[in-house]
Length: 412
Image (spheres, rainbow, N blue to C red):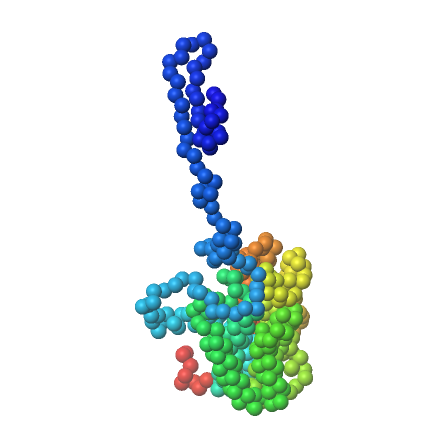
């Protein structure tokens, strides 16, 4: 194979096919390629490539880091434009958003404090005791309004600060899923906080100065738990605040409302001891909730106790909080002359075992979420069993002093 010199000079390359040695030549043919000038080859100018690189690609890769920018997120499931939710569907959306499972944290201390006030009012002169039903209902309304309002305000400010934006196990996700506009969530939360404050102020008048003071503290904690950049939950105070609010503060407040503000130090100390287990269990709920959200909190620069301690110490703290609640129950129910029926709260120990095994095996957010739900059940059942034990113990104590029924009402 050889090239033709004349063709090379004229930019007309040729290929000559020659026969191999030892064989007679059968043919000889010259193949000529079309000549192409360099300036005829299509090219893309460098400036065009630079312009193309600045265009928005069809699939963009963006950082998942939290930013200060706030925008209304696109819903996870986009409904057709002509679709309109029914009243029942809107009710379900808001019901999920207010997180009703957390309302029990506030209701149980109010129930306990009111029952303790009734048991302390029992005497030979008043074998039926004194219980103000209207005050009890008003206290429940105020506490429920404050709790739901706090949940909604918490969702709004967490969204503003970039907390739980990518956490499907986080709050009610009214904003995160694009179901409700952020301003509507905040407005409803503030309205409920105002309603709870007004009703609570009216009820606190009957409970005296300390009941009014407890109500103000509860309102401030409900708002500032998540509001502002220096919120209580971001200062590693979430567990401590929950222990105080859902333990002594609500229990003592409800107790004072029922007793009309009458203060007896010995009885108040007794109420305080009974309220501590509920506070410890509530603190355990908040702590395991922070364990679940530790990754999303870190992205939003939110500092919680769970983000500081690490997994092992978090597990130890959670177990100590639960054991502390049952240790107080044992101290109240075991001594001689104590209301031994209080020990029925230990019927919830199977749930505690499930929670312990869950927290020891939890190495991901979903596992911690299941433990949190189990802890909510423990707090609810523990409080109900404690209230039932107090009621039965008081009734059995006062049974001999109850007025005898008229003979015509006896069944025999």
